[in-house]
Image (cartoon, rainbow, N blue to C red; front, side, top):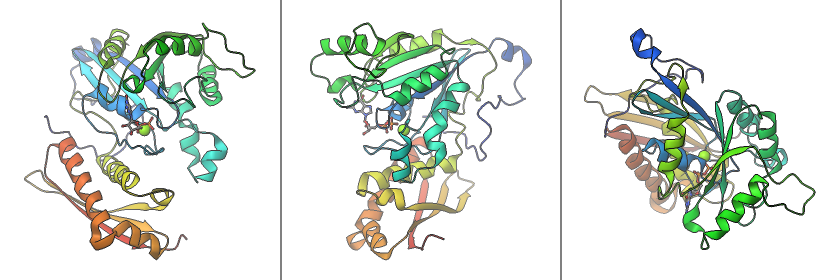
Length: 326
Ligand code: GDP
Ligand code: MG
């Protein structure tokens, strides 16, 4: 795999490709900017990773691993598709309960404003969320109804009866009427895709759709730059993903990450030092685990993912501490 170029600053979402590109190259460039929206845990980050063909974004079975909007892209010939992976659209009250930042609850709207197409992802295997498009999603689509939208039914690998998927598509696009007073569908989806972001089944059809809809415009990312998310943010998200996987309940939400030190050596290897800050000693003990088992697992799994993503040796130093919130 090609090693990823390290980006150290976060440019604006609409940053243009570097000036070093010849003018004639730029004039033939095509681009499509896609906002990916959906409820937490429907598989947005998994899908973006699958479309990009590599794992850059943190994925976990618990909600809210993606805490900020991230941007990634892929290129084929003169076409570039840029995906804005938003945190799940969440209900404000629920967000407050988990003390999520306001940005996490509103980013989806902003990412749509900057996109050419809105891709709504629905977890087709989740009985609770699949049959009604959540009001927050409908609201986001309504606010952006001048932008074309497509529907993705994800996790089809978990759906036993495939005919159900057709029925679900009809419900969500309004072709099959529901007896409900709530807005449960969106009739402006131009296309529906059924796929499994996890296995990759069906993802190529969606990829071809996105490539086919690219429009003349300058690329946002250099061809060898898969994402504009600063490398440090990717590291942070990867560690956070492991915390979500190995810790329970509220603890992963409480732990604060603090980047302490970062060094890139001549041989290309990286040393990363990060503090993991708990608010109580008892939390610290849980994070460390018996004989350091939990923190060691977090570090080892994070290193494996980071080495794969960066194509270079990574040394990770995690310091667990407790500090009362100021
Ligand atoms: P996000 O919150 O929408 O970004 O969701 P994630 O991408 O973090 O995925 C949430 C969980 O769903 C993870 O455990 C994924 O492995 C899982 N997942 C995502 N896509 C699929 C899929 O197509 N099939 C199955 N079985 N699981 C999936
Ligand atoms: Mg995500």
